[in-house]
Image (spheres, rainbow, N blue to C red):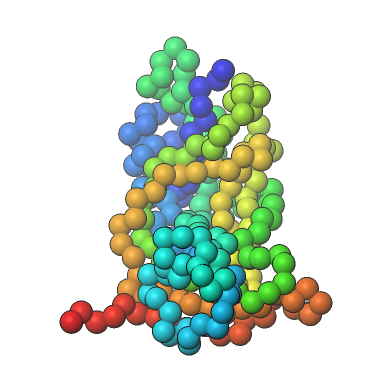
Amino acid sequence: MNPPLIFVLAPALQLPDANTSLEVLQQAQAAGPSAGFVLRIFSRGAEHPDLEQLPFDGRLTGEQRSSSDGTQLLCDALVVRIEPRHHWLGVYQGDPENPTCLRCIDRMALSELSNATCWFYPTHEGSFLSWERGLRLTLEPGSIVDSPEELSSAPYERNQISVLWSLLGNDANLTCVGLTYGGQRLVWPSQALSSDSMATWGLFRVDNQAEPSLVVEDSKKVFPAPAP
């Protein structure tokens, strides 16, 4: 099996183009994406109060995926804000005879890569709630999630990389939500540094017979309750 591939998202000038070390790649990744957001989507059960009265922390179903009134958590995701027009991807791999030495095997602008779509928002009809809260975060160099042996043992190929785009919650425009290699998701371990002081609740409806099929009915910003 080949040494695992390591992926770094950063501005082009930050990506080493020769032999390097993990410490240097960590520094390069620290110059990459530093913002993201948590997104939760719920099917709407019984009537809820006005959006301004929904919980600031987005825990509409408590610790469970569903509540007694029929509300169900459909999506709970952390999305890194990747800018394909500004970020590059560097691909690195260890030397089998010297694992501490990492060699650059590719560098490219994300805008040069193929695109693919995936779906966060529900594709079935109904009324839904979305909750979103922004984050400041720091990323570590990335890797392939659950890489199958046939992918790990095969030589690296740039055409195996795709940039993923999706509609998120009640958004009308596509958002970059990550990358894949050989159809497997790439992940960058993250540590949240801080969260926005507000969150956004949205109410939207999917009607496949309408044009457009996604209708945003309401959106409100919510804030934490003042300290007593």
